[in-house]
Length: 384
Image 1 (cartoon, rainbow, N blue to C red):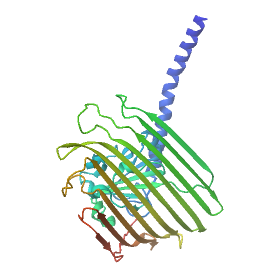
Image 2: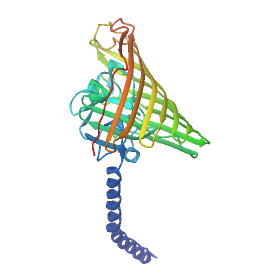
Image 3: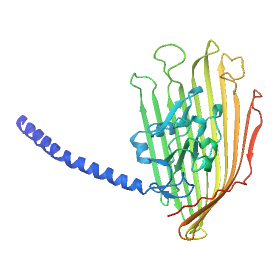
Image 4: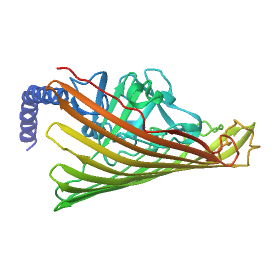
């Protein structure tokens, strides 16, 4: 019996060695196929219109849903940390902020399906607050895009493209748990996504909860890792008016709590920070002709941050804690018309109105409102 097992083991090893070259050849073929598909992948961020990635201007990288699974990304900061030319930095409050080509976090614009979000703590967008539940892929545009998106896109744009409402019933659920290398910072994650389509209606729902325990390896303030709880919910609702006309609406809600010790104003204090973000939108997409497209969208985004220190800080202006209760609101109305004319020319005419309001309980920058009337028209010509 022992000899038989050894013979079978030797036979199995021989088969394994024979199959390794075939497996590698299959893997190389798969990668080649993926590169071919990526070359023909459609992107919208560079010109606000659909183009293949090889024809789009600028340097663009696509992070696919398969990439997200392979890297086990939990949040947007995890998803883009390996993107070329993009650095994810930790700012005050341990929020994760993007910077493309060294231009800084205030010149890297983060969008969801082309929609802006209200800024967060210290006027930054914390990428660790955006879960990957409903992400289809991510487009990273490296290089100046201020002509299309304004000065906050001077370094580039990160555009999160979410999944579409399905035609058939789908259900996905994931649960994960684990600890760090030093058996600290225990992590638990639960995610679920469900959707269906019936007649001309479609619906897609997702939700997740992530809990990570805090840890401190050296016993010295500040803690090495905060205790973090992140919950989210999102939905998409679609209605096909006709073959070429659709109404789409939805929301994203994210709630984060982070708690940990800090050395602030020469004293150990427990910092308890709550972030609540809500995005709402209503959008119309239509094709008046085979080679033209029109989009009209209303978008509203809000972010509330509440930071408590124990013991309390002295509320020194500019110090950490000076935005204990800050509310930010962004309201955006935009429209865009794209059409091909004279066979080789594409024109895009767009208009946008945006109002942003920030308020906090310290009186700093209270009721600051920026409003740009929709008087800007962009003409984009594409010659083939």
